[in-house]
Image (tube, rainbow, N blue to C red; front, side):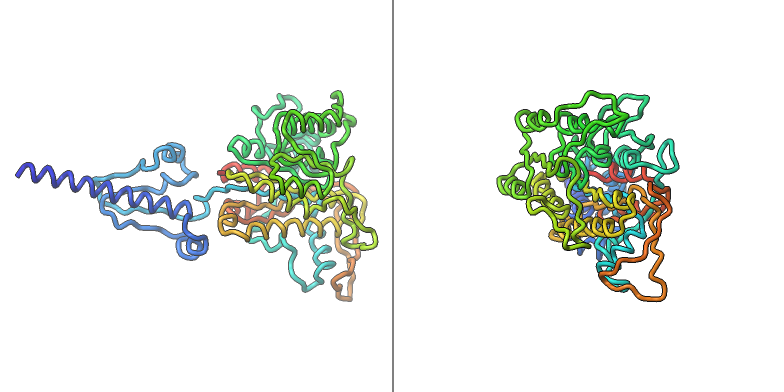
Length: 462
């Protein structure tokens, strides 16, 4: 009798463990969203999953990265199982449990809401379709001031995104009174790199301009362009660099300039980059499977895409547009199995606004809008991409105080240029918009500070 009792207890224990492990597997399958996104989103989103097991108490905290137990439970995934107390397994499923394999951060530098309206009217008319980024499901806005100024510059604004702290205007992810290093203050790009992800910077300015620099370097002055380039290549080792040329050191930078050609040679011969300077060479690099690309298509900033408003202006045949560079970046970076971090900037919207150039800013806004559409199309090609990619479109600051003053008393049609008004030739301090979709985007649909975007990204990146 004792033998049978012992065997029975042993059998019950086996059954309990089996139920517990099976429920754990089911919990992992659901929480990690191995089911199709449609099935997940339509049935399990914001719901509770209840186990039929009478033996297992597997609590949601063991799966959720938002709890203090997460690092331990990730290492020991069945921590929290209780084989003796009858209870229900539950998992609260929502976007907080998701992780982003890819982060694509897109910046229309200097763009305000009035720029969006002007570009939309020109492209689609007053009652036409929204622009690509306007269709992203989550909309929020952010404060933009820097550490020392109500009105920010691009360096401080991008550094706030990249590092999650306020900076003085002109600083590049480095406080002037402190050390400048990735160990002291890693950027979100550098964090992605440490997690085995590919990284890329795609811009229409010089590749060393303030916004890309803040993600891939640490320096006390944005004016030290050749040092920024050296850090990209020798220290951060950004996998993909596509844009204009390497800028020159200018005041107030006091650092000795690097030799630009020597930097390019070193990138190729020591650090494994493939150097390209034409559209055809970019495509050849993609076809041959190159993973580290240094693409410098002009000596300074790229050719403006003014032809979108003034077709007679034209565009160089050998030079890729922002749309083409963005598509190439996705083709290259998606080959990394661990995912990627990609920054894309429409840099010259800002410059057109500084110059009160309405045609120029509409052309550059439409170039950026088309690049966003390329990204959205890429994401939508695969349910997994849609499930694992956080896309953020964020405006660093508004420039020019641009306003639409007319026409009054008549209806604008597609192709029309609105009547413009301006309050400044410099940046302004108004809050700016954020559009987003994907894992973590639910944290971006509200009033934020620009430093909050770093927090969202670092908490959601896989």
